[in-house]
Length: 407
Image (tube, rainbow, N blue to C red; front, side, top):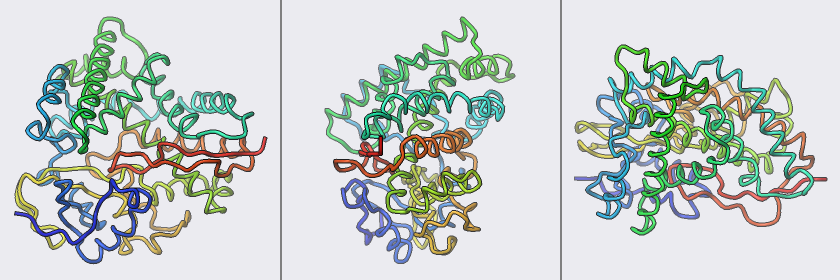
């Protein structure tokens, strides 16, 4: 039993990929929790309700929340996935106590000191990438910079060879696209990509078990070996898969979204070049653009929320982007205001037990990369050709963003 939809929610449409905010504002006013039948999804739009979902893992479970159930998939897709590691847990899809064991392992290896030590390498990688195209005067900044930068940083962090990173990038995109309705033949291709990524990560863990390393994956394996309740190989392998994909696409999206906003918000350029204001400007862009538009949960019981009755076993989207523009929490929510006093309420990285593990690294990469782009590419502006939004409906970013600058 579902409530009739009165909200014209179609995040895969070109119109709402460009502007998801108008329909979400309507939803917050008129039907803050609604059912989207085409996506078989309940959408939660108000800030307080989103926090309720994120902080109550007993009612709103993460288990199976991202991946579609195998019953809904084509037999060919299910068969392909069975050839990989369908039992592999992803940290965003598990509840306590397994979640706590996995997260605890990450906390022991992915320390603030390890993140801080990466800053010189982030600067060097960013500079090397810019060196490769600065003389050209124009480029697709997503292709040349926004996705190679975080991918190379994470590749070094985990000790993955640079030659493997393009494949990992495409396999990670397969994993994301596998979570939304697409033609069966495309889903089969995405399933093959995910299986390759699973096998790659399992092989990397097994290699670290045979030959210890001082990279993050080696540290995870060593911390697991020292644990009183160690994880299995496949359970550990879900960590680099999850962090590589989520970690690099979030930064990629944020770079593209920041530049697009900068082209219509002149003050943002000055703020990013001001060391005192740049961190605040980045937080405000994360709020306004929300690289992850939301994450998913599955209800374990019937629950009342936002005036709606959500049945047990329903898939729910806690809509970060909508919560981040809720005028009950944020003053003048659609305006860019980096010194706003309410910025700490944004949920771009989630809240609760699933708060994004990679948030400190993502913020560091953005603080290094964005000012460097503006310093190295004077007069940065929109280039020839139209920007292209990426197709993943629960994300906001660009697949292509042409830019130009003075040489």
